[in-house]
Length: 455
Image 1: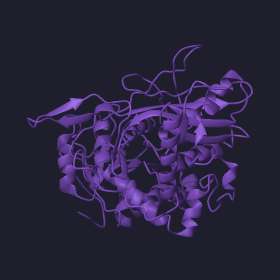
Image 2: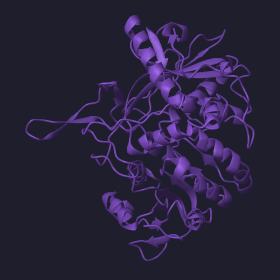
Image 3: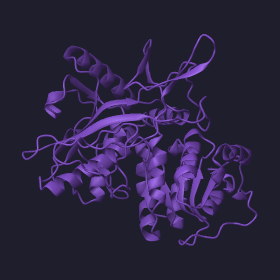
């Protein structure tokens, strides 16, 4: 359902009173009928502070109502807002009613440009989970100055890209400063293991980025390591050699003597590294005058095998970044990722795993592990730019972050579906296709809940 203005339905005839910020709602979840949107809404229903005023928004009222019915009882009187991404009037009316707009509607290059500008104009805080460098660049150019004038806070990439990268690097910066260890120099995120996959929205975003990469100007932007570091209309012109390559294949011992084998490029580095560098730029280069950031992935400790695997990853990533006619292959029937805006077969994910470490090398401190996220233990909290973490003492093991995790299911010969505990990392190889087998964005719900505490 689409319309030129927002409409609302609610099981409660009386509208909730406006919050202390003068808006009717604290948070509007836009795209609540999508897979990640419903995850986010469910998390808010379970964990948002008492009194938080939440509304669910999308373009189809009947689908919104069905999502609300599946949520915990607390959410059953949440209002529904109907707004189409192609209707500027509907978007303007929606953002004017809330303090925070949380959008899970992607690809953002197709559906997000009008919304981020509307939020900035209305002074509404904006949160998304984009992994699209051109969209973030568009937001900087078109909405940054407006947001500064209105007081709106725009926080991009609050999903798997780029929360682990951005917050752990910031936490490492604070730790280095507290220890008086000088400035950060060469800093590398090593993804030790993970379990995840590609949702329908993520696949659609990959298609859009591949299309964008065919344009030479857009391709130069995406390959620019400082593409997001400048202000509106200011894209720094730097050589690609000024920063570590997103396709680096390096010996693990050069990063940390405790590691073995060869490290492969991390396939999300092309976006994550630019987000980290933008955070550093917004902090007036507080990380260090000679700060350089890279992301890699552990593909095994056996030298020959890991070197071959790292090379394969580098070639595949390079083909995508180069803008060749990449089209993600459809996945096997089980498990089946959703199309954009649709749900996969399983309704509610359980958890996903991410384990990694930021390693900082300088004359004072050869290596400093800072991140190791696994299920079931508390860890990083706080908004970007204000990371609060229980830091380990001397010789102690870093605390870990509780994050949602999907696990996996097998269907036996009797047709019954049984849950299998998650492996550290599992990749399916089918012919010339390689895919991770679970959605990656579930950290977004936890990230949003932290933001809403400031509303």
